[in-house]
Length: 316
Ligand code: NDP
Ligand code: OXD
Image (cartoon, rainbow, N blue to C red; front, top):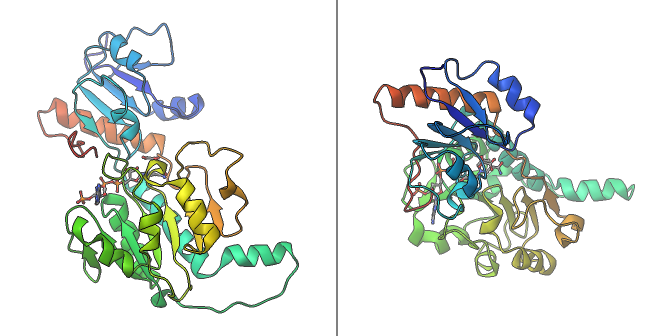
């Protein structure tokens, strides 16, 4: 019998990935698997979850803390009848670094016109394009949390002019920042828009025709570019397609979609100026996830406060 609390795992990673990570995690805890229909979860105290269904909470009525398998918690908060328990987000250097790599890669992809060069390559066309520099472009980052702030730092290292927008105003050295009220002023300066927002009632559908129409036209890339790795529910894909077709937007890099996987019929797949990745900007490293959960449980059991607890009112 274990003398530490038992933990139920309900994650969408491949089983072998979870098994490999469990080999070095949760010593002294009993670990149960939600996908094991016969598992008795009645005494489980902690859950590590991604998109649970309500049945989990019926099977595990004694849970004390829900640990999210990712930084975003919209998949957990969407469960109807979710018990009122603390939800802890996944925050870890591995996740942050991966996201910044993706964001910088996409910003550089559009700066250096990679989609056009790839098209020319397919057409066997030797044609050199104009080369604006990073400093000629303003990248506007929406969402200045853990991920947004790291991306800001790394975009600046690459030489971009960077500005940021968040609900509450932030002070970041060398970066002009805007609060919720400053959205229009922020958009009017932005050549490359980066979305790193959580999905909440306030951010659902925020990337729409009206917003795209407020981005700066006539910058060094001529037309603004939209990059989104926050959540697909924040973008109105119909509006996005029209903005790309009509030249309101010059290009996009999308990791997240209204519906995932993105349907084969989506016109986004075939647009030359659109880069698509399958919600892969920054995957959670399972071993790192379990390490952070283990550390948080140790803190909780020692009577210390948990870190990165979600505010159920704001939804992130
Ligand atoms: P944080 O909670 O640290 O930061 C969220 C940021 O968004 C904060 O700056 C917050 O403002 C801002 N924000 C939230 N709501 C609003 C609003 N209504 N108006 C303006 N700003 C708002 O989250 P992380 O940085 O850790 O993660 C961000 C999101 O990235 C996750 O929620 C998830 O959806 C997504 N993600 C995607 C991944 C992928 O692979 N595609 C991987 C990991 C995460 P304030 O600072 O004022 O609170
Ligand atoms: C996350 C994600 O939220 O992978 O961590 O989307």
